[in-house]
Image (tube, rainbow, N blue to C red; front, side, top):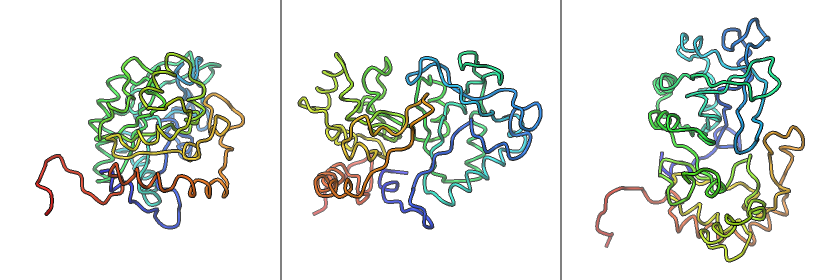
Length: 314
């Protein structure tokens, strides 16, 4: 699945979204039938999901929803998961598996706990799950949401599953000591974002930076002192990643007040909306620039990708 194939997809039926997120090993819908979650009795969980302290929250996150019973699901050849994926692909061209790291190891918190800190890591289904999916749904287009401090084992699992991971420009500096989110390290087998729904807007992020990161970012992205998201959008499109994703807030160059979601905050999320006037201004002021960059960095889908050279056409 190369850049051209992804960018030229069209929504199926009459749905306007072309990518669906499946919330990985922490979803609520599996309560439909017993056995699929860890519970003493239907509706009474033994353990619940969440994450330990991380970039977004110093205390971790206690989500409270039950966890999958992976032993049971393995005995059924992951039939429920496959049915769910098949249903998603009837609507969407691409599905993103959220919290991919949970397929390797996941954070299990006692149901009676008041904090995510008391959890422990448990082993997920690993390669067996993805082999079952590949057999049942050959050619399925899946993105692995592999963000956070995940470790080498999660990367190995993603590669064995032959799935592209995610890269985030806003994580390029100060996020981890390996700097795997610096654009010049992006592999072709990845999907690049300026930021996700969990990030600040890129303008808001730039305005929040202090030294030394403010200077490093200004130098790397050739900002010239600007706090606009657009120099970073250009860098994003120039990466080797097979797909580049720019949130609408960044295309509109909006400040932090347009942030969509703030992890760990229970109120005020998922409320931002763009307006027809904003879209009109974007079209009038930036459409030509965006079209030029899409063509300049071969993201139109009009030219096949190859790893060998040939003489130019006469």
